[in-house]
Amino acid sequence: MDGRTRRRADTKQRLYEAAVELIAEQGFSATTVDDIALRANVAKGTVYYNFKSKNELFEELLRHGVELLTAGFREAVEGLPPREAVGALIRTQLEYIRRYRAFAQLLLSEMWRTNREWHQTLILLREQAIGVIAETVQAGVDSGDLPDDLDVRVASAALFGVGLVVAVDWLVFQPERPIEDVEESLKAIVRRVG
Amino acid sequence: MDGRTRRRADTKQRLYEAAVELIAEQGFSATTVDDIALRANVAKGTVYYNFKSKNELFEELLRHGVELLTAGFREAVEGLPPREAVGALIRTQLEYIRRYRAFAQLLLSEMWRTNREWHQTLILLREQAIGVIAETVQAGVDSGDLPDDLDVRVASAALFGVGLVVAVDWLVFQPERPIEDVEESLKAIVRRVG
DNA sequence: CTTTTTGAACTGACTGGTCAGTGCAAAAAG
DNA sequence: CTTTTTGCACTGACCAGTCAGTTCAAAAAG
View (spheres, each protein chain N blue to C red):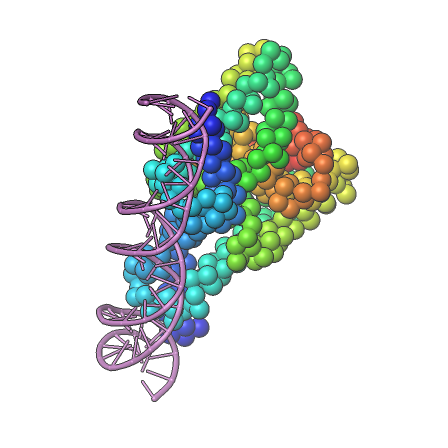
């Protein structure tokens, strides 16, 4: 990657970060392109040089964030036996959300909203993230570590959603609480699967 | 209640319903007052005759919805022994969300959003709903039905959040699934507390 | 040189909120 | 009873402001 490409990548990264924070706080519609440019320390023209539109910036940002999460999931369960794998997923999700708190908030806000332009994108991304979880849960069922009457897709979706709310609730309303505590509570709740 | 008062109450009700649906679908900022008036079959001015502003309409609507839910909670656990009470809460929440699906979606989208004008209202309402759950959970701990090392507030918050995501996810992505199934899955997940 | 960024000006569509005016049910008057 | 008056509830055109997106000349960076 040469200097120009790197420079441009940096700019895009700054725009992602600015947009994620603002949209998490205010929502998509309430966030203006001028706001984003201002927070990213970039001229408005630069936004439109790097992205086709406000909408596309947002969609790319969604893809980027979810891919990062699923990559983390895959890495976390790599070579782990089913018994420990689900626990690793929970831990990974918690750490991811602590690190990318704004993105998690944004995802929580938009995930179950229908009738928006990016809804299809979101369905795909949800499928992607839950898919990784489902693989692990399925392995657990196959190995007998999890009850075989468990509906894998429902359980995986629930696991994903539960981690999301509990973690975001933690960061918003009880940020002083250590991550181990939250992990403990979460695992206590999902005892049956995790 | 005379004719005028009834008429006005009807109008407010229609406005609530229109606003809830639209905001659940599109978000607060993306929903225009014109949209709301149109769907409620009412002139724009009527919105401002009945509510001080778009913001206040939304806040009243939040209060209205959450009060309905907490009232349902209270009624559901009335006179029930702790062992059955938590299950009753879950069932009630599920039924409420099926009945007022749009409101639940809206709550899920806005609940953890900071820096919005209505954030304080939301904190209060969250406190109210979780408070009722906490009373029940506390009774369970006192009676020995629940482990006494359980952090009541965290568990209650988690319970509330979990019910919300699982139920909304059900309605959005698997609406054909019967409520008993979902109740079963949910209770399987929260085995330890519910 | 080329690529990327700047920054300011501009447009046209849209939005929250306002307000003078209308219709009608119920109360008051006869 | 009928007629008149009142004022609540509602209307919809209108206004001032805002925002996404465009344009472009010029500068910075590599």
